[in-house]
Image (spheres, helix red, strand yellow):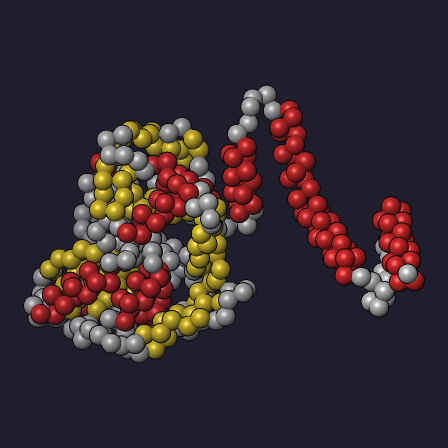
Length: 394
């Protein structure tokens, strides 16, 4: 009975303290029953939640009470989640609804239905056109790399809303989509019919003097296998050297880039990552199938993410020379967390560095030979320089 009385006295004292706004700390574990400890823990959690989300709850209530139209609660809740992720000010960290996540997964397989454009969020939170695919609706409508997409079907989008904009561009073949883009400060609106697009990521060509040319447009699931096939073909034909073109390659699957680097470098470190909650991770080359061909790599301002991992690894490991322009500067890695309702979260979890510790994020990679592209030139002067450098190494 004495213990029960002490328990009631403590409870009254705590209630009085809460009511009076007094902070009270009492440590008497021998008389505190488990229920009181649990109740106190729950109360603390409640206060933390109230402090954290009280404004959101109040705003939600005010919208429900005062907005002049009937609100869709699902849209409101999704908007709150997306806003939470936008608060990171990181265009690569975002919340995807089920449809957006589905489109994200489809892209990784190399097949999609849309307008045939590769996009990235730039440093100014714009949606930047990195590349347009040959004979795609975007290419035939005049959209080019470097353009900024501002609207899709009359709705404005920022770089942080990239996945949502991409989802809006995709759809059944033959259906219409309107896109507004800006070039040199002038906006232009175009209408296109969506079509089925197979994203071939590897292209090859034979250049004069026994030089092979392989262009990697993006790093998808099948890219390493396709690259190895083209590389083997050139080796069998007796090629003397190789130009690898990573220009306008916005990245893709990191593991695919690592596998391709394995074919280019001796055993060693390709890159490493550091994150707040992740242990330092080191990406290594195994030298299982390194080519004997001398090679050079073309890069430009559209070379980003996984492409930069490969380029930086090659540069720091004294592989082939880099030719072109400074790369984009996307040196962060995201992880995807799927949710039971088929939505997903894409979160930047780490920053990666070159083997020598160089920062890539917002800085980019400077090539060994800087060759600015001249849009007025009738020849590919960057490719010409690459051939010149390669011949000197052959």
